[in-house]
Image 1 (cartoon, helix red, strand yellow):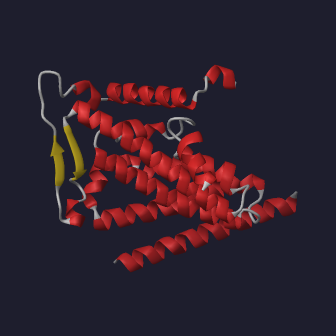
Image 2 (tube, chains in turn cyan, brown):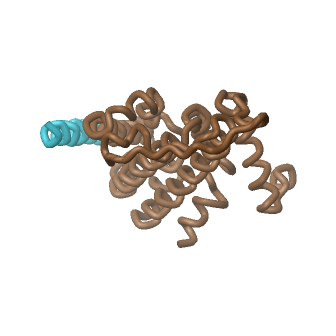
Length: 31
Length: 211
C-alpha cells in the first residue's frame, strides 16, 4: 500500500515536471 | 475504420452520449465558431488520448484523475497559446469555452473509458472518430441556428486575420426569416432536441427499450 502511494506521488510529480517542461518549450518556440 | 465510424454515429458525443453540451449550446451561434471549437477539441483529444494510452501502465489507480487532468490541461494551454498568437480574434469569440475543454466530459470520458484501457492505435482512432463526431454535431447545430436565427452562414470572419479571406454568406430574408429565438439559448435547446430525436429515429432505437 505504501509502495503504491509512493509510486502515485512519483508519477504525479514526473508528469507535472514533463508537462511544465513542454509548456516552457512551447513558450520559447512561439516567442 | 469501425472505431472511427462508431465515434461518429453510434457513440456520437453530443447526440448519443450527450456529453460536453455546455460549449455545444453556447458557441454554436456561428458556423465558424462551431467548426473551430470542434477542431480544437479533436486536436486536444488526439494528443491527450495518445499520451494517456502510452503511460497507462505506469499510472496507479489512485492518481489516475489528477494525472489525466494535468495532461489534458497541458494540451489545452498549448492550443490556447497558439490561438492567442496566430488567431487572437478567436479568443474573444470562443471565450471561456476554450480553457473549459480541460473539464470537458468528452475528453475526460474518453481518457477514462478508452485511453486508459485499450491500446495506443485504438485510442488514436477513437479520438479521431469522437473528434469528427463532435465537430459534425456542432456544425449541424450551428448551421441550423445561424441560417434560421440570423439568415447568414459565417464561414470565415474571425480567422480572416490568418487566411486573408472573409466569407459570410447572406441568405435572402423575408417576413418569416430570420427567427431571432434561434440565436439565443432557447433556440440551441430546440435545435439539439430536434437532432437527438432525429438520430434516435434514424437508428430505429427507443431509449426506453435500450434500458
